[in-house]
Amino acid sequence: MKTKDKFSKLLLVLSMLLLLSFPSFAQNLVAITSCQIVEDGQVEVAYQLAVEVPSDDGQIYLFALQPYEDHIGQRTDHLRAAAMGDGRFLIPLNKGKGDSLLFAHFVLAVKQGGQFTEVSDPMYLTNPEAAAAYREPVPAAASKKGLLIHTGQLADVKALGTKQAIVNIPISQLMSKTRSATSTSYQYHGKTYYLNIGGIDRVIEDLTRQGIRVTVTILNPWEPGMPELYRSGVTEMGDVYYYGFNAATPEGAETVEAIATFLGERYSGRGRGRVANWIIGNEIDAPRWDFFGDMDMGSYLKEYERSFRIFYNAIKSSSACARVDIPLGYAWNMVNPAQPHSNYPVRDLLTAWNAQTWQGGNIDWGVAYHPYPAVMTEPEFWNDGIYAIQHPNAKVVNFNNLNVLTDFMQAATMRDRSGQVRHLLLSEAGFNSQSPTRGEVELQQAAAFAYAYYIAESNPFVDGFLLNRQVDNRQEQGDSFSFGLWKNDTGAESFEAPTEKKMIWQVFRDIDTDQSLQATEFAKPVIGIGRWADVIPGFSRAE
Image 1 (spheres, rainbow, N blue to C red):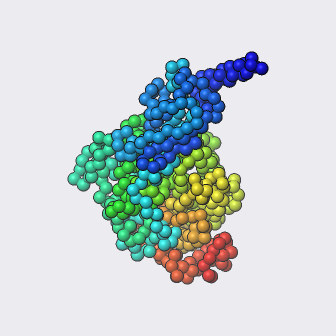
Image 2: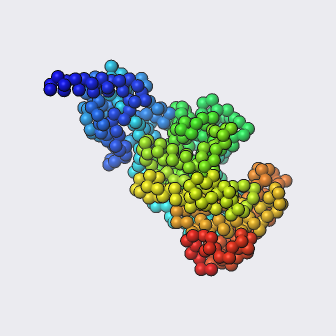
Image 3: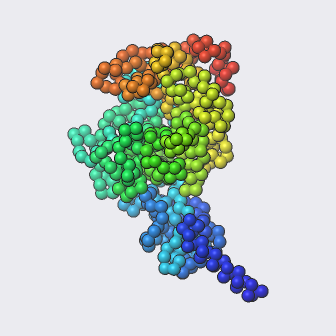
C-alpha cells in the first residue's frame, strides 16, 4: 500500500511538471477567486489551489501585469509571497501614484527549476468604483428621447426638449504634444499633455445645467503626430474611419491612461458638468470603425479589452455610478465570407466578449447599440423582414426586431455582477430623408422616427434612444445619408450648417410630451397600421 501511495504521488508530480512545461496548460492550477479593492485602499487577491502544485520552495507569488503585458516572462519583481495553500494577498492600490495598481491585472506564479512559472489566469480589478470620490447615482432621464447634437446649436437642443444628448470626442482634436493659447496642460506620471478642452467644457456644462443626461463617445481618428495611439504596424488607411486605442505598448498604455484619467476626473460631476455614459470607440463588430489590424475576433477583442479596461477603471474610479459601454452595429448574424475579418457577427462577439471579461474579472460593462434600418438609405425599417426577422438567427437586429437583442441580454449568463440585465443604450440610429432611388422622403423619415421611438419607449430594457443627428452632415450626405432634423448648406465651410427644419423636427420635439399621439397620427397610414398598440408590445399611451 505504501509503495502504491508513493507511486501515485510520483505520478502526480510528474503530471504537474509536464503541465508546467507547456505555457498553455500552466494556468488554472490556482484559481483567483476575487480581485477587488477592499478597506483602506487595499487590493485583495484571493485564490484557491485546484491541485497540489509542485514548486522549488513551497511558495506562491503575486505579480502585477501592466495592460500591455500578457505574461510575466523573465520578470522576478513579485509583489508578495506566501506559503503554498489557499489564501489572499493584500497590497496598497496607490491610486494616482506612479506605482498605482489601478490598471494592473494580477497573476500567481511558483518557482519551478529556478524560474517563475504562471499557475493562474490573470485577473483585473472588478470594482474600481470602490476608489471613487464621487458616488452620486446617475440621475434618471426625464424620457428616452436623445440626440447627437450640433455643438453650435445648443439653443435648438433646448427648444427640442432633448432629454439625453450624445457628444463625440475625437482624441485627435482633444490632445496634442504642444501647447497652444487655448490648451490646458495635464500632468500624468511625470509627462505633460496638452488638451484643447474649452469647447467640450462649455457643451457638457451647458447640457448638465439644462438637466440633459450626457453621453460621450471617445473616438480615435488618425493623428500623425501621436503614433503611440495606434497598434504597432497599423498605418493610416483610406477605408478606415477610426482606430482602436493602443494599450499594447508601454507608451501607448500610459497615453490611454492619461486620456481616460483626465476625462473621467473632469466630467465626474464635480464642477465641469457630468457625463453619465461613456462609449469607448465605435462599432467594434466592424473593425474599420475601430481598427487594430486584420485579425480574428478573439485577437481583436483581446486588444480592445486592454484599452477598454483602462477607460473603465479610470472612469469608474472617479465616478462610481458612471456607465461604460461597448459600441455595436446592427449586423447580428452576418459575415462577409470573402473578408471574414471585415466584420464579426454581433451575437458571436457579445458571447465571446462576455466570456472573456468573466475570465479576466467580470465588470458591469453596458451596450451602446446602433439599430439602423437594414438598408440604411431607406427609412422604412418595418419593411426589413427579410433581414430583421423575429428569430435569434436574424441577420440584422434593428427596431423591427429589437426584442431579439433584449431577449439575448436577459439570459442569466449575460447579466452583470449583481444579476441585473446590463445597461442598454440605443446610442446611434437615424433615418434618411433623401433616398437615392426615390428622392425626398421626409414624411417617411418622420414616420420612422415616431415608430422607432415608441418601440424604444415601450421596451423596459432600453435606457435611451439617441437619434443621429441634429443637422445633416456633408460627409454622410456624400454617402447618400441625410439623417438630420435640419437640412444642411452643403456649400458652407462647416460640414454642418443648418438651413431649414425638416418635418421630423416637430415630431422629435413633441414625441415625449402630452402632444405625442397627436403629433404622430400622420405616421399610421405611412406605416400601414391602425393602432400603435397593435404592433408595439407594451405600448402604454392611451390611443
